[in-house]
Length: 373
Image (cartoon, rainbow, N blue to C red; front, side, top):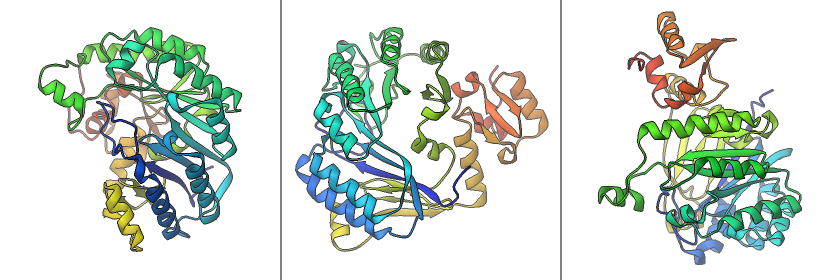
């Protein structure tokens, strides 16, 4: 049963040893600012005392959270425990890079209260990792999973990317399955403005895969992982069983409240959304002055909330409530004939083909586009 007063807590760690050429998340290579940032996060958390009754998930994302020291992570986790109410069985996740994951580091993370690791593998091919300018090797990814298991982590998620030049996608998926992770995230390489890869594309030195090829890779992952028993519960995410679904990220897809701390972090209380300044220095300075580090905020209308629930729900195997769908019966029937949705138990659920066009599916349901042939 959904806890109406509960929220998810996200802490954005905006530091990386180096910036990956495909990444458009807010991060900087300035490790000397981590102590000031830690102090600022603690101040921000204190400002929200009492704003959310309790938290059911805690998530350290980035950036590269595993760059933080034991002392810094311990300080943050202790402040979380003392400043706000976190339920006893909360999912506590931290994103880690494989090259940061010694056995000692894994044991430290477990002792601090983390019970879920999200490991940024991306590929098990050293050539592909070189193209992505990742700092780790394929061997380090394997060792990171071994260290996690030895430290007592039973809930481990692996991040993989597809649509990469000279990648053997089947080999990457097969290697991932040999590691028997609880969860897999499979992301298509998407070239975003402002990234190094975007500039390379503009200069014609990088050519992304065709839409047809990306579609084939997506469908192959669905079939290959599904054949191994993994449930494709969100466009990019697979779980060994329902208990292994990412509880924190599922809050976003279910349109449930969450509090985001750190530069550029977003928050949502069920009606209003707000987000922080995308500057580490600006973020720290505002909190030193006792001010909320806000960049802006918006209060969502009833119609905006409905459309967001529709958009997010149609990314998942749970689908969207029929009451949130603005379609008439003829449109629903047409999309069912096209093999994009099924309607059952009062919900509109995307098929695998529907997930392929998840960004367009709400427009199709709202009658703003014609269904593909």
